[in-house]
Length: 264
Image 1 (cartoon, rainbow, N blue to C red):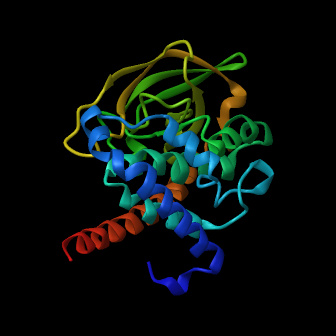
Image 2 (cartoon, rainbow, N blue to C red):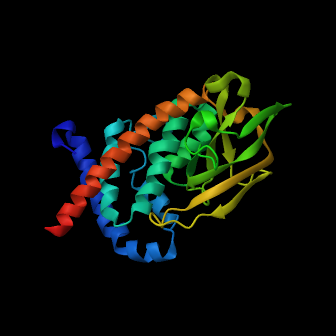
């Protein structure tokens, strides 16, 4: 990306991130592709070195920076030699954690954002479904209030980090009759009763990134796991997609540049 967009702290961050990627990730890329996953230790190492916290508040362990830190890390990850490594780290750091940072309560940020920045908890973002794809209005996963819990039924498909995540931000219809105003996001933790990873998907590319189909069968989660406001999930998801698409664009340009450099 054009250097004039960045300040000196971003350039320092870039040099550090690229040094880590080239020394600790790239040498293992081929082996991880064969094994079809990269070690969980990569998340913890990224957190330890401060690479997951650039764009998040200092109050929760971040650096207090802006979106440009995400862009710099996304560019650096294209040098890893594995698109799946970038997809796994990127989904966690550029999609799941920003949703918690934007809409989460203080308690949710302490439970998920802080350990997410440290790399000790991994996040996933569960919107896509077998019959709806990424058409958010077309999702069928349903969440109904029963006492002090949400009861969730449905399924999700092509979920990055789906096999190994510690928490999932799940898009649900909480009031189907209200259309886009009847969608909410609910945080689901690994091990919740009624939740299962039904299968790990065998993909053509990004093989080091675990991608899964998820199933919810009368899964119960506390009402306080609602992320943001009830009925505002569609708007929250659309805002998140903007950031995700910007990062994907940055990664695509950086990947093309990496290909050019490899041929020179």
